Image 1 (cartoon, rainbow, N blue to C red):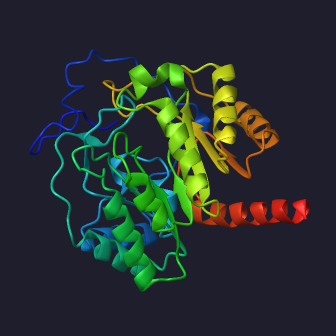
Image 2 (cartoon, one colour):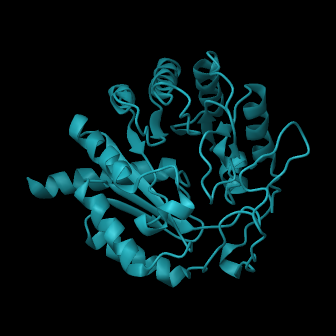
Length: 318
């Protein structure tokens, strides 16, 4: 597990430092992954370092980093490594962020070109300190990538732009291929797990994307094992379908440190499969539900599956 207090510069999670330690449950066999270290992994790491980029793969302690980086897949995290929110599940640093780097859009585009990415995922920290929440920076990154590698499909995983009027429209007008915004958990847990966010605002955000541009795929993800009830998860699926969301991801929550929200349960692979079956029955074009699923896990292959599923659905309607 990573530490709450780094030994350099400033605390990673100052708001969590004085919380009591919680019990860390032993991980079941189906959660275990190999440590990274392949030559391709190191090559990806080198490209990320060369361009001074931040990745959510590292900042969030993703368990799939070894597999993804070995395939030269990396999720770029723009606008710095410090978040203005303090979600109880998240391992990204909390505090006052640095000013935006005007060279970042071009540096991200150069890295995408050098990695030869067919599909790229761009995410960010929450930037409540900015008037537009960073929406124009997202748009600038999309534009820079399209300029260098026009055939690369682009997926954005955005914050909720809470109280940032007009911000969502700026990102949607830049026309990403996929607009992803994660609900993270069921509404009853928001006060303890995602206190800076509002569940129905996030639902409305996703619905609004489709209203502005129905051709953009929408996507959302949740973690399970935080203490949610099964019926709450099924209701969340219905809420997303009412917002016409195309793609649902579900993965097991893993506790970054003893100061973070505890794991309440490890959901079995069979339970994930049952959730997947139900989600498809509710009308999602694509569902990824496994213990190790994360928002951008297999995103390139999933985009092709998503596009094929929508084309099949449109053909069936004709």
